[in-house]
Image 1 (cartoon, rainbow, N blue to C red):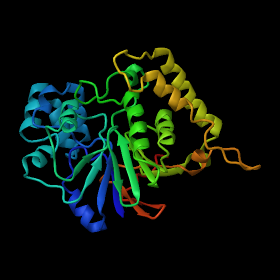
Image 2: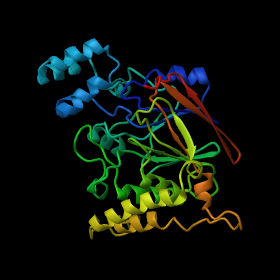
Image 3: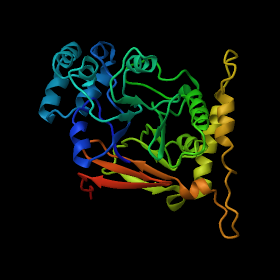
Image 4: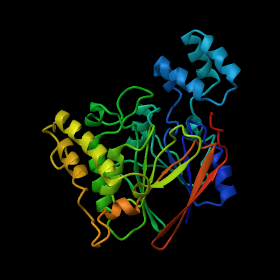
Length: 336
């Protein structure tokens, strides 16, 4: 099976049909800001996120500057009438279509109400599949799962998922716990396993721990603003103590803030999830006289893509194996 891996469509994704044909893939895996906006999102988007949408757009720089000089309501009107936030309304109305299956999580810059409508079944698009804590996708020779939203270094991880503000969608510890349960319920027979997460400037230590708990072979993040995509193995670039220490600090901080609501019987609460994430350190140790690093530290690969229009990767699977081909369309020259 061949999968095209892309990041940060940011609402412009109908061109993916041509890419799927060009690279002869069976499906597309997307991570990061997908473009979960509908026709009402622009009216409730805070001004600073509205400005961010303009500066992130593919409009000429001169046009962007002209828009930024306008009064806020004029900018909002122009976006509503012409500079649409997303092509998603075309998919919802049937004016556009995805010709291959697209599996996506969501990023931080989304409308949480639109995400909730997809998760609740009010919105649906043929061939569009969400990667969230309640779904695990058994593909040909591959187990695919994921979680969306930003990971913040404050107490938002302890709150209800997604949040309420347009443009500021976050993940939660409760979602982490549910995803681990969903993956465990899928059984052990399918390997390799791919976890898709939304990343900011780097992979968060808790996302790495989540990947370990889910026994992922490949962790796919989203665009971090770097000039090109990156692939690495933790043991090749970072000392084990540094990797574990960063996660332990985060877990201790969240332990001090966390509390379990009493009305969630049968669900992993915040403290239980933290105990689970903190308990992976000693698992799967290699029985070798020369090597004492955990096998997850040696074997798991992390891939951070660039923006969708700047590069891509191809995942190719076979019985018990996974291949990753990285392609870069553009690379900025370094500032010297």
